[in-house]
Image (cartoon, rainbow, N blue to C red; front, side, top):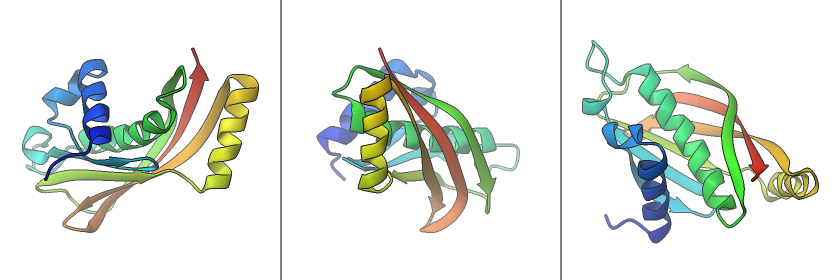
Length: 149
């Protein structure tokens, strides 16, 4: 599958700014304004049971949230960070860690952008689903902060 220019842009950003993403085999397989999907092979992110390592699954989920927000704000001079997160593991991941994230509804994004414009800082909660073979394997919630440079 040919990746989109946005997917390549996010993946290049990750590999340049977060070097660990290369070692993890992170690929941005889908990216458009408001939605992203990121994958990494379990073979490079396994635990002692040869299933996805929980820390890697959490990292891929964090990257999905970060990536969708970074993509939405890339024209603005802001830094994005994760302030807190939780993850709930539902099933083992055996082949590919795939995390998908979509931005919240337009009204919530408008309020987020208005706070960022008014104060130079804003926060937003994002939900990420980790799937394998179209089945939810983990659920991640993260509070992300954007701050003007």
